[in-house]
Length: 336
Image (tube, rainbow, N blue to C red; front, top):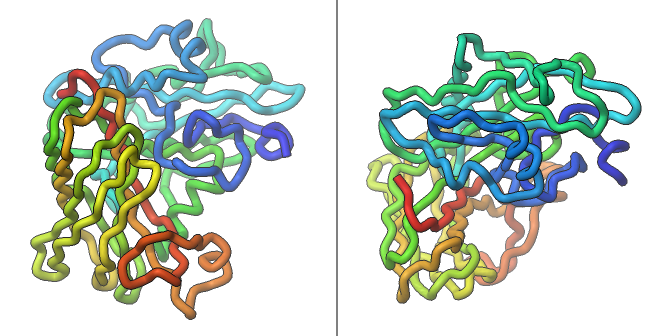
């Protein structure tokens, strides 16, 4: 199915290959259309020329305590007629099991949280096939403490209205599929780390169990250009203490997994991941952390349909798993 037949409106992508088909293939958390750009003004020519790469946000990570502009890019996939719409941007503490209840809207330069999409020259009417961008940049709150954050963009158009009040989700599966099945939603859960080091402490990554029952989770690590090593996932919260280690298999194509852990119902907390490598991490390498839920006999039809086997999960070799969240760290020559 082509993109126009599947999504006939303004698209904000979940990743570079995303052309509007649903469900979006992984990684759904690496939207290149949510663009942190430091204190600079994003030129429309650069916005267009980088549509197929590179990811502009990787070279302009958030610098805490300074002016940080974030733009949202879109593309009109309608056939034969123009489109128009507004975009909103939200942020929350980033992590492996995102708690959507923590979303906070960002305010744009000049005020307001709903910003019109415009084309080159400033018109709000977007011709078919044309790229557009938020008329104003959204501003990162300078008072936010350093840490890992994610951003979520939503597009509100006459054909596909999106209210300012985001949905509530009864489970982690509901949230993930809201992203996968809505091309007018973009999610960016990606950060930069310095390359050429052997030890990384990735602190305070959010974890949450939105389910009303205690739920079992497994963590995984993979990536690109990874040396051999280990990743230890730990939590000191007495409600759910754990320390679990996964092997890193170079070059990262094969994912390594921890043993499983049970999180209490409606739990919200953090996990720290210590990555220890046998060799320095190359520049442009990627570390991808994921969280999975083993599917039980009581799972619904949607969960069973989306679940996949994973090879090498300790004690759960024959289970099927739902991917519930992920975070990507990209190694760059310099980072904040």
